[in-house]
Image (cartoon, rainbow, N blue to C red; front, side, top):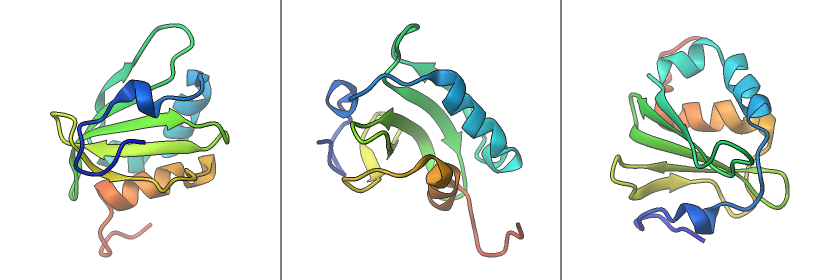
Length: 117
């Protein structure tokens, strides 16, 4: 498994195919939170049956890439990397549930205590 400080290996990190409309729907539900990340350059590894989703963010705490994978437990594995792919933060071994995805990323990319929700 990819570790902090290593350059991400997307083939090693990917496990299951994602249904992109579901992931896009989750991100759209985040609304202004996702917009506050300055997210752009959305990328998938292949057009059909993608296993990796990547976006570039420019947040308060993190500037670089956010990689999202679906693991064998149907949970998300998320990696925050530099623009060159060095892993800075990642989810734990289990992954995170879909209802935690936006909050987990926001906590590490943009959120500061002074923001009011």
